[in-house]
Length: 137
Image 1: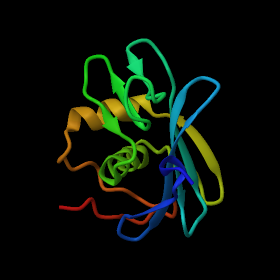
Image 2 (image 1 turned 60 degrees about the vertical axis):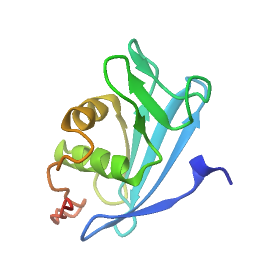
Image 3 (image 1 turned 180 degrees about the vertical axis):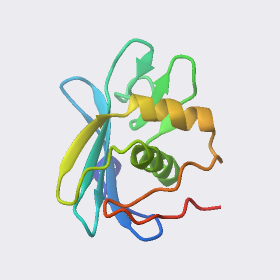
Image 4 (image 1 turned 180 degrees about the horizontal axis):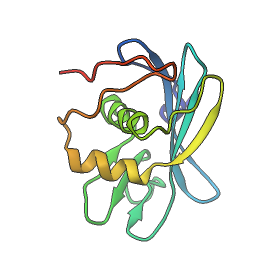
Protein backbone atom coordinates (compact mmCIF):
# COMPACT_ATOMS: atom_id res chain seq x y z
CA UNK A 1 0.00 0.00 0.00
CA UNK A 2 1.36 3.42 -0.90
CA UNK A 3 1.94 6.14 1.65
CA UNK A 4 -0.87 8.21 0.16
CA UNK A 5 -3.47 5.53 0.90
CA UNK A 6 -2.36 4.71 4.41
CA UNK A 7 -5.11 5.30 6.95
CA UNK A 8 -3.94 7.26 9.94
CA UNK A 9 -5.49 8.33 13.25
CA UNK A 10 -5.88 11.89 14.46
CA UNK A 11 -7.03 12.41 18.05
CA UNK A 12 -8.84 15.68 18.70
CA UNK A 13 -9.72 15.45 22.36
CA UNK A 14 -13.14 13.81 22.44
CA UNK A 15 -13.00 12.39 18.91
CA UNK A 16 -10.72 10.17 16.87
CA UNK A 17 -10.61 10.82 13.15
CA UNK A 18 -9.30 8.38 10.56
CA UNK A 19 -7.71 10.12 7.60
CA UNK A 20 -5.82 9.50 4.40
CA UNK A 21 -4.36 11.55 1.58
CA UNK A 22 -4.37 10.64 -2.09
CA UNK A 23 -3.90 12.01 -5.57
CA UNK A 24 -6.68 11.24 -8.04
CA UNK A 25 -7.36 11.39 -11.74
CA UNK A 26 -9.06 12.55 -13.88
CA UNK A 27 -8.67 16.14 -12.91
CA UNK A 28 -5.30 15.82 -11.18
CA UNK A 29 -6.56 16.60 -7.69
CA UNK A 30 -5.30 15.97 -4.18
CA UNK A 31 -7.72 14.87 -1.48
CA UNK A 32 -7.77 14.51 2.27
CA UNK A 33 -10.46 12.11 3.46
CA UNK A 34 -11.49 12.31 7.13
CA UNK A 35 -13.97 10.08 8.98
CA UNK A 36 -15.01 10.40 12.60
CA UNK A 37 -14.38 6.93 13.99
CA UNK A 38 -17.37 7.03 16.36
CA UNK A 39 -20.10 8.86 14.44
CA UNK A 40 -19.16 7.89 10.89
CA UNK A 41 -19.35 11.51 9.70
CA UNK A 42 -16.95 11.85 6.77
CA UNK A 43 -15.48 14.82 4.93
CA UNK A 44 -13.50 14.79 1.69
CA UNK A 45 -11.43 17.96 1.18
CA UNK A 46 -10.65 18.37 -2.52
CA UNK A 47 -7.77 20.45 -3.85
CA UNK A 48 -8.42 20.63 -7.57
CA UNK A 49 -6.50 22.52 -10.24
CA UNK A 50 -7.45 26.14 -10.73
CA UNK A 51 -5.66 29.37 -11.72
CA UNK A 52 -2.85 30.11 -9.28
CA UNK A 53 -3.32 26.78 -7.48
CA UNK A 54 -1.00 23.84 -7.92
CA UNK A 55 -1.74 20.24 -6.99
CA UNK A 56 1.09 17.78 -6.60
CA UNK A 57 0.67 15.34 -9.45
CA UNK A 58 4.08 13.99 -8.54
CA UNK A 59 5.62 16.11 -11.29
CA UNK A 60 6.27 19.55 -9.80
CA UNK A 61 6.67 18.33 -6.23
CA UNK A 62 6.02 15.47 -3.88
CA UNK A 63 2.58 13.88 -3.96
CA UNK A 64 0.28 15.36 -1.34
CA UNK A 65 1.72 18.87 -1.54
CA UNK A 66 -0.58 21.70 -2.60
CA UNK A 67 0.51 25.26 -3.29
CA UNK A 68 -0.98 28.62 -4.21
CA UNK A 69 1.13 30.92 -6.36
CA UNK A 70 1.37 33.59 -3.64
CA UNK A 71 1.76 31.29 -0.62
CA UNK A 72 3.87 28.36 0.48
CA UNK A 73 3.11 24.67 0.14
CA UNK A 74 1.08 22.54 2.52
CA UNK A 75 2.07 18.90 2.91
CA UNK A 76 -1.18 16.97 3.21
CA UNK A 77 0.69 14.01 4.71
CA UNK A 78 1.55 16.00 7.87
CA UNK A 79 -0.79 15.38 10.83
CA UNK A 80 -0.45 18.98 12.02
CA UNK A 81 -1.57 20.30 8.62
CA UNK A 82 -4.53 17.92 8.53
CA UNK A 83 -5.47 18.91 12.08
CA UNK A 84 -5.49 22.61 11.15
CA UNK A 85 -7.57 21.85 8.04
CA UNK A 86 -10.03 19.83 10.17
CA UNK A 87 -10.28 22.59 12.77
CA UNK A 88 -11.03 25.12 10.03
CA UNK A 89 -13.59 22.81 8.40
CA UNK A 90 -15.35 22.34 11.74
CA UNK A 91 -15.31 26.09 12.41
CA UNK A 92 -16.97 26.67 9.02
CA UNK A 93 -19.61 24.01 9.60
CA UNK A 94 -18.37 21.73 6.82
CA UNK A 95 -18.39 18.50 8.86
CA UNK A 96 -21.62 16.64 8.09
CA UNK A 97 -24.04 14.91 10.43
CA UNK A 98 -23.17 11.45 11.78
CA UNK A 99 -23.16 8.77 9.09
CA UNK A 100 -23.10 11.29 6.22
CA UNK A 101 -20.23 11.89 3.77
CA UNK A 102 -19.69 15.40 2.38
CA UNK A 103 -17.22 16.89 -0.09
CA UNK A 104 -15.79 20.40 0.17
CA UNK A 105 -13.35 22.57 -1.74
CA UNK A 106 -10.10 22.55 0.23
CA UNK A 107 -8.68 25.78 -1.19
CA UNK A 108 -10.57 28.18 1.12
CA UNK A 109 -9.31 26.12 4.06
CA UNK A 110 -5.77 26.22 2.62
CA UNK A 111 -5.97 30.02 2.55
CA UNK A 112 -7.03 30.20 6.21
CA UNK A 113 -4.41 27.67 7.37
CA UNK A 114 -1.53 29.29 5.47
CA UNK A 115 -2.44 32.77 6.73
CA UNK A 116 -2.64 31.51 10.32
CA UNK A 117 0.87 30.03 10.11
CA UNK A 118 2.23 26.64 11.19
CA UNK A 119 2.08 27.17 14.97
CA UNK A 120 -1.16 29.11 15.07
CA UNK A 121 -4.13 28.01 17.11
CA UNK A 122 -7.31 27.63 15.20
CA UNK A 123 -10.86 27.68 16.47
CA UNK A 124 -11.46 24.73 18.81
CA UNK A 125 -12.88 21.85 16.85
CA UNK A 126 -16.26 20.32 17.54
CA UNK A 127 -17.15 16.77 16.79
CA UNK A 128 -20.24 16.03 14.67
CA UNK A 129 -22.11 15.46 17.94
CA UNK A 130 -21.29 19.02 19.04
CA UNK A 131 -18.66 18.26 21.69
CA UNK A 132 -15.85 20.76 22.00
CA UNK A 133 -12.34 19.45 21.41
CA UNK A 134 -9.10 21.15 22.47
CA UNK A 135 -6.75 22.67 19.88
CA UNK A 136 -3.49 21.68 21.51
CA UNK A 137 -0.64 23.83 22.85
